[in-house]
Length: 192
Image (tube, rainbow, N blue to C red; front, top):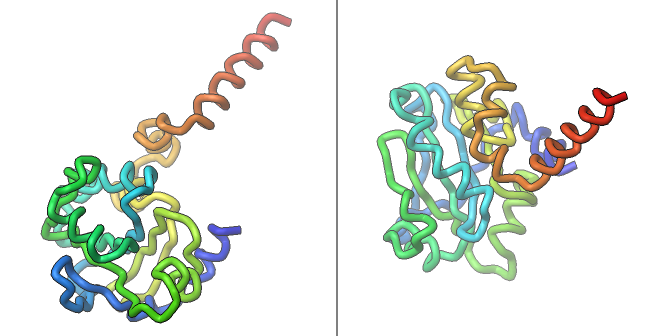
């Protein structure tokens, strides 16, 4: 249901969100810089967000003109500033590159949270969430993984091979349970 709600955003113009840099200055993204821009919504305590972001630098190499990522933090401004200043060891890999930028979602306090406002505007209720935009800021895709999107859509790699070689695939307990069950069932059938 979550993926379906987010995918209904395809074809819409990406909304003008209140974004800020780590010093609190307002930021307006320029989507015309790249053929495609991926918007990445994340927060500090999100393991899936960190797994994806750890792979961004490598995935973006050699694509400085083709694709950009704007990582949008939904944490409070103090947490975002600390993350950008390298205070949190788990986020020590985060850096700004020519095609990877970091901003804060900064809705003015009016009894609502960034999370709530994002759910209202873009149907985002799970993280990380990704939106692929064209040069005009129109949402083209809402992939479950930005890294896999880059590998399959831009690098033309086989989706199954990308799945098998993805770091995220093998960090999931569910993947290991399914794999072990599959091997067990295979052994049962082979021994019949």
